[in-house]
Amino acid sequence: MNLLDILAHLPTIETERLLLRKITLNDASDMFEYASNPEVSQYTMWSTHTSLEDTKYFLRSLTKMYKRRELVDWGIVHKTEKKFIGTCGFVEWSMTHSRAEIGYALSRSYWGEGYMSEAVNAVIEFGFREMLLNRIMARCEVNNIASARVMEKVGMQLEGILRQHLFVKDRYWDIKLYSILREEFFENIVE
Image (cartoon, rainbow, N blue to C red; front, top):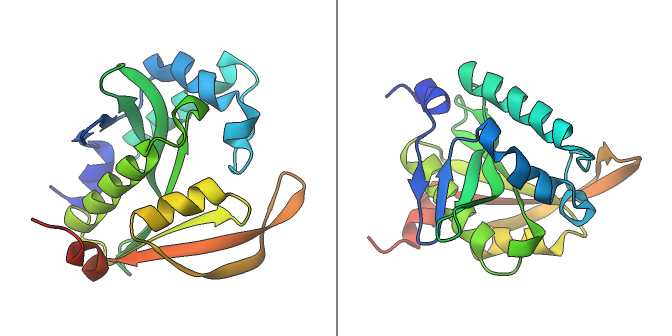
């Protein structure tokens, strides 16, 4: 499979408790349920969804991105509950440099149970095995302790703080930058 085909035909990834799959318009109500929560969107680049129409608009744009073979998130589905609970995927990919950046969001109802670490770990493994990446990074606002904890749990290392790196929601954000290298990831996997 051509690397760009990966984006057009995003494969489903199964973990112990989750299914990571293409996002569809049928996910609108579940996505709105968490995207309308200001706690969830507090440290995201996107604004809190104020209506189901906001969510549907966003989902329609994702569908177009799949068709154009652009980077798009996987939807995270809780296998037992069969509920769409978040997103995880690559937000930037440099084929030339074999590196990518990962991003994610999770429903408040599922925080603190290891779901995001499980999803992020699966996406990182996909990046190293299928996209042939050498480096995967992730960033979070310095006060986003839960996101930093996810990065640390999956083996990422803090590289530093990018001071006033982004201007989001009317203020400059200091950003923590984490990364993991291919060799580090596979050193920690027991085949």
